[in-house]
Amino acid sequence: MKTLSLFAAVLALAACTPDFDPASQVEGLRVLAVRADPPEIAPASSGAAAPDRAALTALVLRGDFASDPARQTTVVYLVCLPVPGDPTPTPCVALASLRDPTVALAEAASASCDAPAAGTPSPLIAFAGAERCEGGACEPVVLDGGIALTPAVIVPADYGFDALPAGAPDRILGVQAVALAFAIDARPEELVEGASASCPLASVAGRLAELWAAREHVLVTKRVQIRGPEAPDAPNENPVLDGIAADGSPIAEDEPPEIATGKRLLTPVLPADADALRVTYTKLDAAGQPLESAREDWVYSWFSTAGDLEDLHTRDPEAEEWTIAAADASASGGRALVALVLRDLRGGVAWTVREVALAQ
Image 1 (spheres, rainbow, N blue to C red):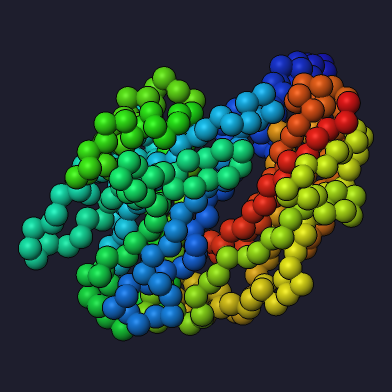
Image 2: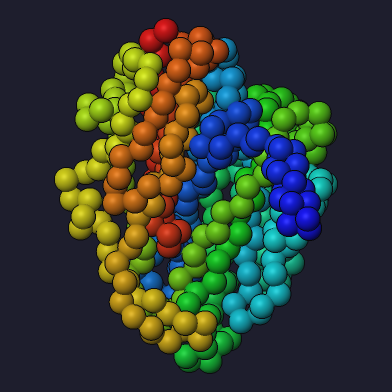
């Protein structure tokens, strides 16, 4: 009797389980990835074969793309740099968990415009730029007068690992900068209106704080590797994608092809030397000691604004099944975006986006 009661309870609970949209389905505003180029940087004073800065950009898609292809999203960036050897989380880690982090963002942006007093270190938290995103593509926001708010993580000249003894874990493992990407349903002009020429960054962040509660928005985190001076491997580089193929035929980037309803097989289009780009690197333990050599494991994540994808992630590179029903074609206005994000699981990211016309 108890068994029957338990079985009935399980059935009742299952009947109440809500249906969730799959993660591969783009509904509303989504930031699917943030890329740092290159994915690994180092202080200029270290002499490492890596630059002291990485450009940031986001992959932003909207579920309502077909109804309003020109609708714009603005992404504003905040970056925090850790102190080598100090395990204390950076302010960005705390900001990412706040219900409304925009007030702190505005304060950080204002502080980043103040020149530090002589003999003090560069700020460990700073406003890092903004970009305009439309139809799956983003570009830096440019203010009147040609001031470009190009998003980037920059390692200050006075930043380094010199205070740590030789063999210290952070000198081998390096540390990670934390970048926060604030994506909001707003045109850049709404954020830069009245921006001060002397400190445009603070003005943009202040306006963002005003609009955050009233507009659709997303906050995502990106970690950028700052290379330690005793790192055993060459600096990491981003993987490369050349496109997406549907049923074996590459989808043209400049002229959206018509895709028939039904089941289509999607596959990544890779460069001829893609196999050589999957480098071998050294796995390290928490103390920076080598464990083993491993080859990069590339993971492909699929997204679309219409239809259903069978898997969120594929590997090596397996085909992804995309099912498009007549109702999908009608509801989407006959247009859709398909996005593919490739990660090397070491911080490297690549992506490609293709538009298609859906046959009804």
